[in-house]
Image (cartoon, rainbow, N blue to C red):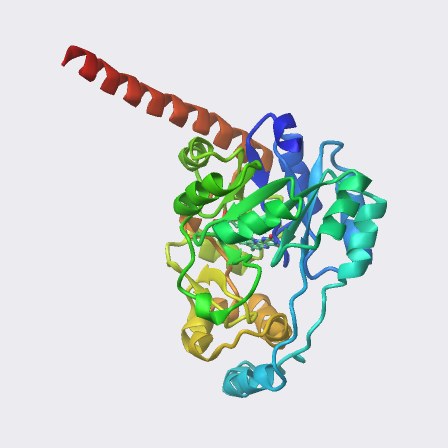
Length: 358
Ligand SMILES: Cc1cc2nc3c(=O)[nH]c(=O)nc-3n(C[C@H](O)[C@H](O)[C@H](O)COP(=O)(O)O)c2cc1C
């Protein structure tokens, strides 16, 4: 397992949409962790370029993340939401994008990864069928599947996944759940609960994600049964990250996060702002249609430094992130985790001593 070869138990989360760069991915892999390349929103050819550019910066293992396509929303769903955004678009002097369904170049990406297998291929928004998993494994990749419930964990393990990324509700960005059923909104698991439930349900190695920003957080998930911690938001202010200035500023502040479909049509966690407050109530389950609909508004917000229009994806602990170079951050998290584990062991020894005295 790749997880057994890492010298630090730190995985860089795939960060689609701009924060990830080849430099960020390579820095974490070069530090002894596992860097990820986000394949989401990239055509297969662009993903191939990204893999090539990253390969120039590291010879250590890296992972590639792919979005599993869903199904189109009912006709008219995104259009009805677009009507509620008309005033917003007019005020910003921006034309809304065209809501469209697409499969994110799924087949071409799988073909690319089978032809040039990375160390790990991870999946988000679903569990690919057994044949896809098998073809990637035969080609030489490990296959990881991101799960948000014990039932998803069992399905992924039964489908042949080598490891699971266990994503708690604290996580920044999209919730990875397999089916985007609005009836499940509000029922997400906190990471510690989910980790215990998944550990009890399946026997494969686990990587824990969601709200981890310190060595103590890393230590907590290692003692909870994970083999490594996957961090996204904590790396977004690193100098190597492509994070925009608007996002960097918001990440450094302490405005709380919330889940919303307003920007993309799927639940995602971001820092509360004007757009979330105004449009979450009207936003339908329609991914990626709504993603394309709001793209010009989000781009205009970033260009004009108007944080109110931007999807400020962030996990619940975003204000704990710093600005260290990514390799130093990864190594320091591992060192702090070791210290936190020692402290916990010392606490248990002290309790033993009290018991012995008694
Ligand atoms: C800006 C951003 C982009 C993300 N993009 C992806 C992605 O492309 N694929 C994916 O599986 N997860 C993505 N995630 C979720 C992460 O994989 C991970 O679950 C999350 O970052 C963990 O929580 P944390 O941000 O509190 O560390 C993204 C998260 C953020 C903040």
